[in-house]
Image (tube, rainbow, N blue to C red; front, side, top):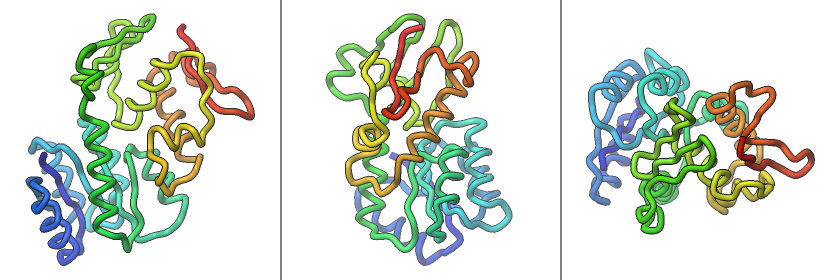
Length: 227
């Protein structure tokens, strides 16, 4: 696996790089947003660890730009312990976030969890493609097709639609979704779920304001209905 670390704190980058190399990862580094975008475009990257505050181009803009050409998982780092920064990071396409200062063990756990979700399980491999109505999920490519249209999804968005499609009609509370998709020890709150569901609807629904696939059960949560 190849990881790109993007941060202008060179000592921090050195420490993160060393720890992930000890785990067997190949690690590339960038120290500003402009360099990060170029490397994400030119190199075959499996995951990006991206700082929010960067020279030249900030982390949110980098995230947004990368999402124009890649669905590579992005774990965002932020020194600001403010909810709006976290929500904006998710809105711009980040899959997870961690607030500085952080424990390197937690960062490694987050990264491995994201990469694990990107890898098909044994049960998924037995049936690498499932089709429900006009929605097709390809687990090997982690790709969703609706009719003839291929939908580009981030890792978390794919995990969400996978859960919904495979459990059609079942209502999940926001807390349930946090536990299942993000993990029981995820420090975020239910707004994380709302952000991702909104972004998922924008990608798969003909009219996100009147969804035909992912419905809201008011006061409870969300559920999937075959169109």
